[in-house]
Length: 136
Image (cartoon, rainbow, N blue to C red; front, side, top):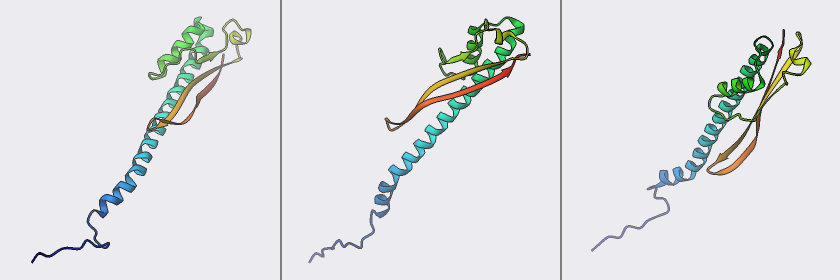
C-alpha cells in the first residue's frame, strides 16, 4: 500500500523564496535610485568645480589678457569629463565693468541632467552653479 502525502496550507517549503521574490524588486529599485542620486551629485560637484575654475580664470583675465574662450576652456578642463560646450556664461571682457578694478565677474555653468530608473525617466532638469569673483 502506498501512502499519499497531502500538501497542506501549513507547509513552509519555498516560503523564503517567495518572500525574497516579493521584496527583491523594491530593494533593487532602492539601490538603483541611490546610485543615480550619487551620479547626479557627482555631476553637481563637477559643475561647481568648473564654475569655480572659470571664475578664477576670469579674474586673471584682467592681468593676462585671457579671452572668453580661454575661460570656457578652463571650465571644460575642470568639468571632469562633462561636456560643457555652450553651457558656460561669462561677462564679456570688452565690457567696461569686466576690466575695471574693483568690479566683479560672474560665471554661470548650466548642465542638463536626467535621472532614470530601469529606463523610465524619473526626473530631469538643470544643474547650475554660479560663481562671482572680484576683479582687483
